[in-house]
Image (tube, rainbow, N blue to C red; front, side, top):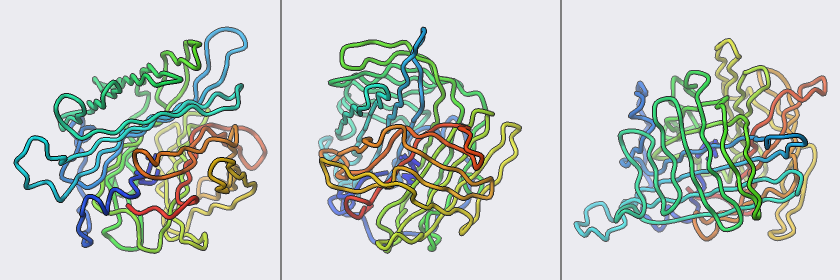
Length: 361
């Protein structure tokens, strides 16, 4: 979603704590409908408060007995309103954050790392012309219909290439996606599902050549969360037949939906955009994190106009602690999609925020 709605904000944004420090004004206006233009809108939109680029996927190592991995990389940008009129080159006008993670399914473990820096001085940058993001030694860029990511980390590394196999999917009303009952709670939001993925993963000293499928979300906004919303649940799923399913809901403190939505696009390109009230998340099984003592639903029944599905985490422990960068603890991990007949029909990522503490974006 990452909405970031990283999810909803994406998907995958999870900038709790940054808003107050940045001195953002409380008033926001409804975003106008607009035509997204590519490749320009793959790039950064520094006049907006929050933005993120979010890629998740499932990959299998080559050879017999291939190992299965989930991978997630998210780059965030935050505009710091209180510094915009400063003339000093040292003024932190834009902050860049990044998260990366690998789910080692066979090893039943999650490897996580993160980065943070202010824009400038060759350390961090996000181009406005096309997708070209750098944060220290991490990078994500696009060239034509191909994306490449390189993220070396302490216990793992990602070096992956993603090729478009389908047209861009404009979420919401042709790319304008509502995230709440007030018109100001919206984002510009598009996805690139069914990305053909190849490259290498390094996990605790071992290197694996992998192939798989990935999902890209890019989202930017002035305001996303309604005052009563504490977090969200979001899925982005690549189906094995070539279809793509997005579903999300924003929750209040009692677990009720403040807003919901999503879309389903068939392999033939038929798009069904869900209306408010058409998506229902029902928790089936929960898991309690030993480090944070936070309880998350790790299996859901998700009812949508496109069908009723079970979403099931491949391993329970996929909690991310990003308090040293974006300030939040949340759950985001590789999951499988099962239809009402019990058949596995796809895989992708489930993201859950606001369970450890309410988000403040």
